[in-house]
Length: 79
Image 1: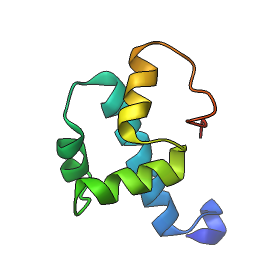
Image 2: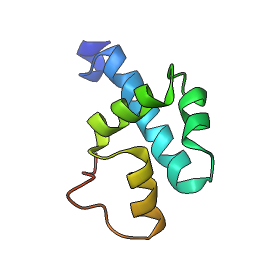
Image 3: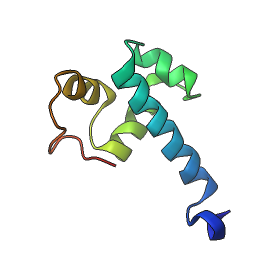
C-alpha cells in the first residue's frame, strides 16, 4: 500500500476522515459530537484532537471560520 500510494494505510484513513469531517462541518449543521460518532471516533475530545493536529484548529473554529466566509488564516492551515 505504502509503495503504491506513498502513504501508510493508517494515514490514508485519517486523511479521509479529516476530509469528510471538513465537508460535514462546512456543509451541514450536524453537531460535532455526531460527526465524531459517524467517523468512529471514540469521543468528541479524540476527534477534536485529531482534527486540530491535522488542520491546525479545532472543529468549532474551523466551522466558524468557514461559515463567516473568511479565509482560514494562522489558526487553521489548509491541508
